[in-house]
Amino acid sequence: MSHYLARYAVALTVVVGACSSPTDTKNSVVIDDDMGANNGADVRHLDVNNMPGDLPMTGCLVDGCPDTQVCNTQTGSCVDCLTNAECGANGLCDPVSNKCSCGTGFHRCDGACSPNDSVDTCGSSCTPCPTDPNGTATCDGTQCGLSCAAPLMVDPATNRCVGCTANADCTGGGASVCGAGGACESCTVAADCTHIANSPVCADGRCVACSSADESPCGANSCDSFTGQCTTTPRSSVDECEPCLADSECMRDHACIAMNFQGDARSGGFCLPLDLGGCVQPFPVSVTRTSLSGAPGDYCTLNEARTTCEGLADYYAPCGSAADCGADGLDDGICEAVDFEFAKCTFLCDTSEECPSTSLIGCATGDVGKKWCGAF
Image (cartoon, rainbow, N blue to C red; front, side, top):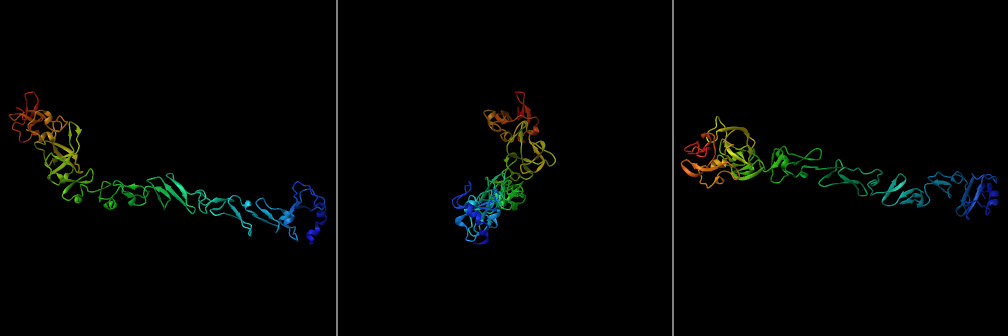
């Protein structure tokens, strides 16, 4: 027997089999350092079945272990674990190193085994995955990701939800460029429109098929500047005071001008002459307007308080009532005696300069006390 056991021979002889302490078990013995003068503070319980033949009463067998470790009675050393239970949920104890590790799919965070596929402890990290107000954090078990609400997408460079990462993501003609902030913006040059089908021209921030400045995609036809699409109307083919969609449809020194009747705007435009130094019959009124193709200037028009281009065009046409004369739904024509003929279309006037040059009488007072072109 070694000197360690000899030191405690008397105490062991006395207490083995006679211990009635609540902490005793049938396989344990009590060792009293004070040889019988036990005050309770220096009692150690050892597993008799696991005691070595030559018990070294040192280390944790004497001093115990911190709360975070357990005593290995075979070596007298404090270790992290002896069984899996001491490593917590999903933990494993290495029987050689007596160190805790985590099972497959888990890793150590703050002393516990955390799942690799959790957005709070993704992969081998112990910090939450970044998120975005317009998306949801994800984890594939290795690295964090982000799922964005449609139509937004993930910018891999910033891990943010954005509207675009390249021009190809911007498919709207009015917003074809991916800006620095990840939002689709208006075009500034034709190169910004190369990915927009059938819209190679940039006009007023939109990718369109054509523009008033570039009608080449339309061949011999004009370009509707409102829609940015080619029309079926050949350029320079629309006569004076006829409906139009673009300046190029009108004859030389004419433009497509928006008109009104009695102060109410009319849809579309009509080809009217430019004021090149004075307006003449039947367009005696000079106005400053911008054409439908965007050309500001002075133009000659008829008396828009009295009639319309349709009313002017119907002059001297046969009629049964005023409804047969002028534009549909407008009070811009009358059916009266005109130029010595009865039941002809005409319109009210203030001066003869407002009447067609073909009028034999011009603006005169008729038999109902009103003035109209051709009254007699």
